Image (cartoon, rainbow, N blue to C red; front, side, top):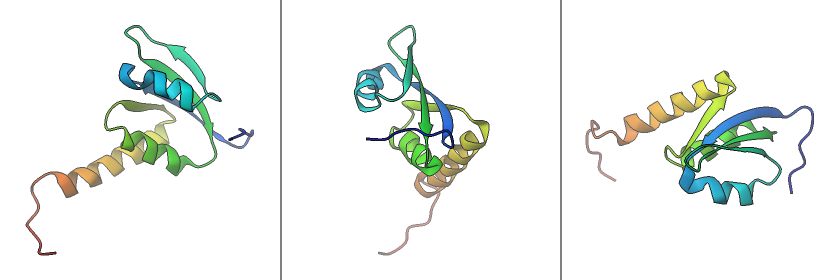
Length: 95
């Protein structure tokens, strides 16, 4: 189990309705605010910012990091880099 500390980074995330129940069960240490339509806002303390980047990307558009802005920029860069690899404009390489 994770125990937040005062040195952790505070993040704010918007969670899509179809992930909301799972997130509530998986992240009980987070502060949750329900949104109209079934989604939610999740506030978490994290010790590893890279975990947040990976977690947001692993949910393919169903989780949006709202704050902090510097971490949003890292996620945007990671998404652009992934898009370049999977965007279809690549020349075929042999394995």
